[in-house]
Length: 211
Image (cartoon, rainbow, N blue to C red; front, side):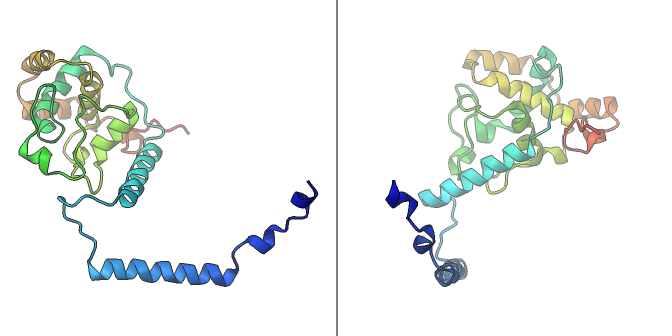
């Protein structure tokens, strides 16, 4: 115990000069790596484990933070929302995210990182799903559907994705067959019912702000 009390931590901390030299060395290394172009950004050349882990963490933390305060609508689980979402998902999302019983597409195979198969991977909260669909995700080919679709239609997609993981191929085909047939008409109807997309009056992000 006496040895622990007498231990001088200051003698074992790196000196200021060491920290400065290390920072300069890291900066030079990063500059060389960037400007020589040696790091392959081709989609057919996977990231190193360290880079992938870093980007994965940045993405997940960013989504979690930006989705805070987004509240799902009370009728999110309604059959009407799920039905509308089925048609939107089948038309807009299956090329990358596939569907129950669907074989990989040329597009899904060429993506890096590959888009998750949402029938098997659905670990994000409803708020996080909404945020990702609306704003997209950089460096993943996930588009920002909020540029062309209202918050209400995006919540429809969230409602459907919530059901997707428990859906068989036959169930998927049945619900899509009964979904509204005309995507463009559905968007017009939604625009007519909402002078502003749901959530826009609260800051444009689906947030229910408290004042």
